[in-house]
Image 1 (cartoon, rainbow, N blue to C red):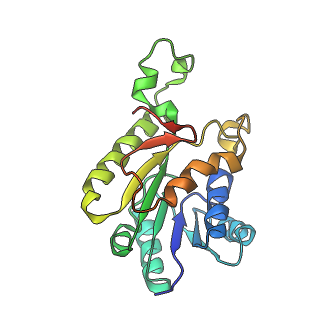
Image 2: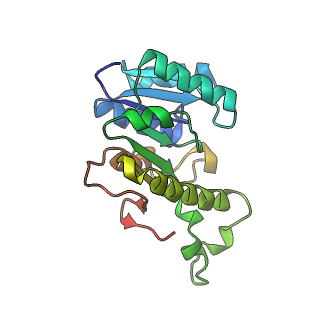
Length: 209
């Protein structure tokens, strides 16, 4: 087992995920750059730095998830932080249980807030369509479920909203930079033992479920 803490960021070959990987590397982590395409992951890992490694990982494919988890166990023997940027992955849950202060961060969006979208005065309410927003609502529910399940272990599980960040998901129409969008996920990844679990927040503070 290596001495440095290890972070896995899914969907880290571009956008917010790549910036989160860079920020965690700057905080002393060995960062696993999760990417469906190993080639894209390898290119991204070069930009993260010498402590980054590409990891082929398709979170929708259980074989890929299992293979990634086995590689982490075999090569590094530990996983301290899991940032679900591409979706929910159970790739490192057993390893996370062994970590002294593990953290799981799910990259969500206030677009998935039922409270905000139930308010007729919310100007963004018409954008609550049938795919993206409800998927983030489900992610928030899973965040809370994980937090409750893992409460006794000391593993902290939180959801972060990066804000309207310019990425290829929105054709770079977002008004925030990836550096800004990465701030809240990284803050939650670095929580100390007194930090919260089972929360949903952005840079300005707590968000309603």
